[in-house]
Length: 274
Image (cartoon, rainbow, N blue to C red):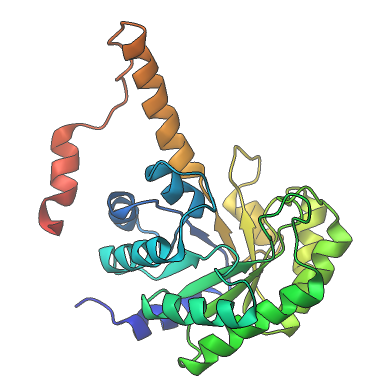
């Protein structure tokens, strides 16, 4: 029987207690359903991958579109789903709390709140403001029962502010404010990862590996990381194949479909999932 939302959230929380798991990022219902067949234990949405699938840049879609997407992914799979919820879709803590309540209603098992502003002139919220926003998200989750995981994200390395000391200060503040898991996308070296893991222990850390890496799953687990996500990497890989094939057509060639999945394979995959 399909698992209930409560069962999926409980399973997701349990995954964060020991070991290290991969949290791949589908961008639509089809990719979510395919990833489900490969034995992954949970999935996470990708704001960038979904935005590109609609013909928009990352972080430009309105809240109602993102909420509908979250509901679609949750309903597409029996796996727990972690939501890439950008910076919480609120101009102030009250707005973040309202958005988080709506996100929890979609059935997600976890959601992340970034400290990025979207303003190139001031790309990060001041740490006290960021803490207020995360605290508001924490209260909103607690008011719904508290079983949805809250992930606090320090966007320094993505926002052009690669200051590890400030990143760690932010993550520690987010942990104290109630984040269940901490995430600093963009850190890459062994030293950076070890420093982040040690700073927020015993709370779990998410590591982004969005490009070719020399790390293996075992390497990352040995560093103390609890989960690995890939962001928009799978979507970018799909776009890369599509763009290569399409460019071949534009050049008058028909030899760029090598490696394409067969229609029969895809029909078999989705036939029983109508």
